[in-house]
Image (cartoon, rainbow, N blue to C red; front, side, top):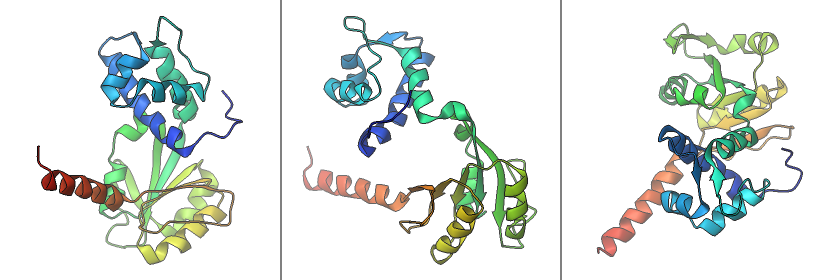
Length: 214
């Protein structure tokens, strides 16, 4: 399905959550579900669910609800899980190694193909059956292999330099784990991930709970 109309970022960010819950429903053998039942499981309103899914065509039938497998597959198509995107990791420190070993990426259609670093103590180390390569080999690797996404796990001050190099090599997707909100003057898609932001939101919620115990 084409996404010609502008879909809000908030809706798009909820799609992976729908996908995850629908996957759980399939594992439980549930074949259909109403927006009300799904809302009770997910903790968002049935109206919000219907509005979100209507952005992409709806998928539901009045009086029946949603066919779980069909909706799961359709959202998977929208998210591109069937495209089998390939990714490399730049930065083989703790974060890079954790990402390289995360099994769920491949289940979601993202294939790990290489990892790079400049640290001689890490180069040659095998992580998830891939040897850490020297950054000097990045150009040749990208030239000879399909690379859709680069995950950036490099120090803050190195992020713009590495990102510029990756973009110039023609990689179109960047997943940036630096604290920097990365922007580039190229035709690339960037997703900035700030883990500490999520932790601070949790800290805020916990603080409010401690202030107002029930």
